[in-house]
Amino acid sequence: MRFLKIASGVSTLFLVFMMSGCATIVSGTTQKVAVTSQPTGAKVTADGKMAATTPTDFTLERKSDHTLEFSKEGYKTATVMLKRTVNGMLAGNILIGGLIGTGIDAISGANNKLIPERVDVALEQGEGYSEAPKFVAKVDQDFYDKNILKPAQQRAKKEETAAPKTGTVSNFSPANTAPVAS
Figure (cartoon, rainbow, N blue to C red):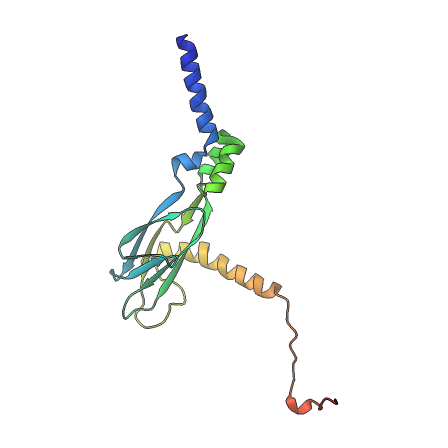
């Protein structure tokens, strides 16, 4: 009788584990992102909704990309994109959680992680907008340039060349047109 209770309990735990995603359990559907700026005290807005003053932390959903905008009097506004990428838990989920767990993590966004995982921006003095964000640490700048900016620029270039050209007329001059007979 005792064996049946233990077996039943183990079976129930196994089913609960199989019905939930591994990444959902281990890393959750949100991610805490530490946000700082040089100088401190900049207003930072996440996705145009949540606002705080640096240094701060944002808890963001893993299932979508996010945009952070930094502004401070006397400094250019800087925009940083946070992109989602595959979380390492996905491999464990495929092996242990099976199709159901993988599906749950895909729907919830738990199979993603946001990059960069921390943001420490060096604001530039001046007005207007920075062309690209400047990071305090070179390693962060290199990572952002390689993993966020370069792919975004490549996508934009690809979309630009793939876009159909609309009817443009070269050498058009009103002097070269004849009146239309009615």
